[in-house]
Image (cartoon, rainbow, N blue to C red; front, side, top):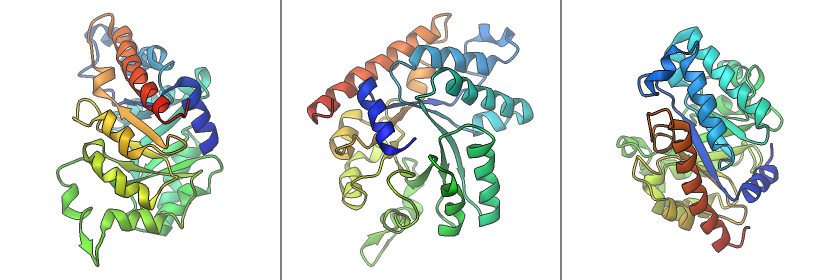
Length: 275
C-alpha cells in the first residue's frame, strides 16, 4: 500500500483513525474467557465493529509475545483475519524493533514477510544500517520512532546540539533512507503543538500519532498542527475504544466510540477540503 492508496482510503472512509489492539486478557470481558482463544475472539469482535470507521489497526506486539507461542498464534490470527476480511485496512505491527543489520533483516522477515503486516514501528537509535533492512520490502512501511509522549522523552529526544534537537535530527537524516511511500513517523499527541515544527521538516510524510483519548491528547490540535494536503495523519486510539465497555455489548460500544472519532475526523478533513 503506497501513500496514494492510504489517502484514498482516508477519503473513502472520511477517517484517519487507527485502532490500537493492545488487548490485555485481564481487561477483556470475562465471558470471553470460555473461548478457545479469548483474545482473538475479543479482537475479532472489535475489528468487525470498528472497521467501517478505521483505516488502520495497530496491535502492540508486547501484549501478545508475553504469552509465548500462544500469544504469537493470536497475533498472527488477528492480522490474517483483518487481511482476509478487510484487505483495504492498513495494519501496523507496533514492535519497536531495531538492531544491527542482519538482526533487523530477521525482524523484517518475521513481520513483513511471514506475517502480512503493512508496517512496523522501528527504533532509529542504531542508525541507517539498522533501519534499511525494513525498507527493502515493496509496498511495506517503516514507522520510525521520533517524538514520544512518555515522561522520559525529555531525557534524550529533546537534547539540543547546535540548535538542533535530537528528534529533529532523526527527522532530517532519516529522509535520506526512505520516501513518503515507505516511511512515516511516530509523534505523540500529547505534544501536538510540536507538530507545527515537525511539519517544517517533513511536510509530506505520514505521521502516526498515539496518545489521543485516554492519554490526554487533543484530536483537534493534532489535526490543526499536523494535517497536510494528503491528510498525512493516522491517529491511534486504543483503550478509549477497545475497553470502553466490558459487558456483552462491548463490541457495539467500541463501534460507537470509533464512530464518534470518525465523525470528528470528518469535520477536520472537510475543513481542509480533503473530502
